[in-house]
Image (cartoon, rainbow, N blue to C red):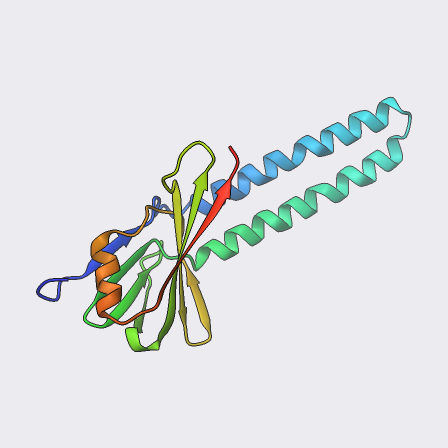
Length: 165
């Protein structure tokens, strides 16, 4: 953080349609069990229960896909630390700025897949006031950003999630 220049972290994607594509993928995947249930029940001669069960699965998947889209609307795609303030930039260009003294904790959640030891994805969470702001997935924190958070006297908590491939 030299000369008051901001230290910036970017998410992997700042595309506004990111969540809609993820929600669409969830809807497509949800059709697979519905088709299997319908076909399996049809072979067993139980078409009416299969029809109702298939109708129930689509709205549940649709509600989950919509929840993913709504949750992503507030996700930050850029984090800037400069001058004792932390600014979050959203995909639509909107910003929210918190003073460093108001930030209780800055969490880094790394996801490490079984194939390698380096984090493949990192998500950030900023705890300020009564809110928890989160980011889309992106790279791990740079040493410059760690230093900027230390200078701003923000608690940094790092956790690692291990996932199977």
